[in-house]
Amino acid sequence: MVEPQQHSWKNDWLLFLSRLFLLIAVLVTVTLFPLLDTNLRLIYIALAVGAALCVLALILQALSLYPSAVALLIHLLDLVVLLVILYAYGSGYSPLFILAAVPVVVGSMNFGVVVGLISALVLAIGYGLELVLAPGSALSPTAMISYGLTVCVLLMLAIVAPGIARASGAASIPAADLPREHRSSESRDRLKTIYQLASTLSATLSYERVLDALVDTSGEFMRELDGSASPSARLVFLYSDKHRLKVNAHRNLVDVDLDRAISDQDGLVGQAITTAEPVVSNSAANDPELKSFASLASAQSLLCVPLRAGFEVYGVALLSSSRPNAFNEDDVELITAFCNQAVIALQNTRLYQSLQEDKQRIIDTQEEARRRLARELHDGPTQAVSAIAMRLNFTKVLIRRDPVKASAELDKLEDLARRTAKEIRTMLFTLRPVALETQGLTAALKQYADKLQDADGLKVHIQGDMEERFSPAIEGVAFSVIEEAINNARKHAKAENIFVRLRLQQELFIAEVEDDGRGFDVASVDKSYDQRGSLGLINMRERAALVSGTLRIDSKPGAGTKVTLVFPTRDAALAAPT
Image 1: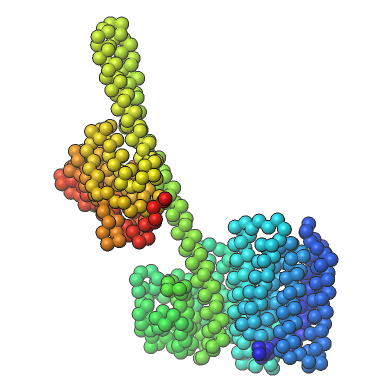
Image 2: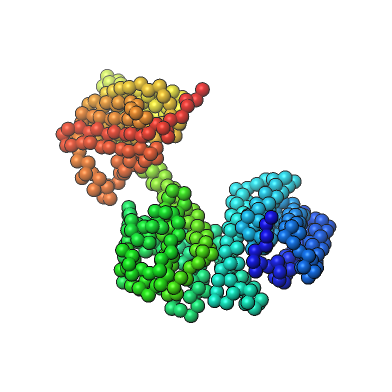
């Protein structure tokens, strides 16, 4: 049987006042701000039941007839009443869902983390069903994200609330001996700190703000631990290189320590990262990595918490105190909860930054494609059409002066027009090769080779016939890289023959494009890209990275060029469409 926690709210007025506040807040809100689909009658009935439960609990407490089984039953009925109110107020879309934090915190502090988590899950599942089953329900992505974030906050509150309750009793004066007003104020302050942290972490997509929120929130807690002692140093180390950590956020750090880097192999930091658990130490003087930090010289207590999500470690958070044995088990649990929430927010910010970088890369690739198309149109069909127009004007004159020469000139114009049309069709084929979608990569490359030979007389030899198909996106990337390599050989290498070899080898797809042209200095071209208008090689490498692949370019002046694309088929291969 679940027993109420020591020094819980069950035995004082705070539990009664929290229930009363919840009922009054609901009553005022629904009366002054009713929604179109608000069922006031059902809400008033639920409020009356809630008030009756509140009075009953108060009477039972006064008569000392409030065993844990009765307390749990009343707490469960509180949850049911709240779910009824949420549904009646908004038909599944109630803005009062934020009030669900009150019974979650009360249940967790009063009965422990298990009951708090169960309370949060009951509210989340119940309200989720209300959203789905509500008349005219149409869940938008924004509503789902908001619902998910709120549920995460409820679960976090359920986890950290007992730690706050226990930490409030870890001061020099036992919690039972503190004035009731002081205990209530301290609990409210800690809840306020948690709310502020959760609000900041859910509202920002900047990792700098996430780290600042972490060190500031831990600072509030450290001020309670240290009392009137000197301000404690707080640091967040993130990886700057393999096995090397640098300070990315800090408070009360002297200037000489700002640029220090430490290893993740030794000392307190190394132990925290290796064990993936928070580690407490009494001094930095004997630590091989931290002893050089002047900011930690006076510290008599150190706490190092790994910033870890799954198998990925971002770094560590390090807190110091000038008091000996400043961190007890409850303190470590609470601070670790802060750090875990920060890690989740840090993951979100890095994902957002990665998406922004991918978006910019796509924009740059599209812009480069437009520039390339403009260049090819200018150098090819546009020049040809201009030549046709000029020669037509010349032919008009010849028709009157020399009909025989005019006829020969018309033959030349016809040939030029046909070659221009073929060149345009080849360009359109590279923009959207239909054969790539219907027949696969090998067939599309063979058609492209035929068009090049027909238009320019260039011999492109396709060697290898793979039956295995990949997803359209994967084949599109492979085709674009190979086509770019062929186009570079056609335009710049002055090659007579281009060989394209396709093969599968040990779960790897390998494509080689080799020409017998004049070659070039790869390093020199890479260095001069900032002065060039074209980003061909860079785009080819970035496209290869999209399929978790690599691109190798081997070339020397006068020795031809070989471009090799390799990517794993385990991640890229999909069943061919039927």
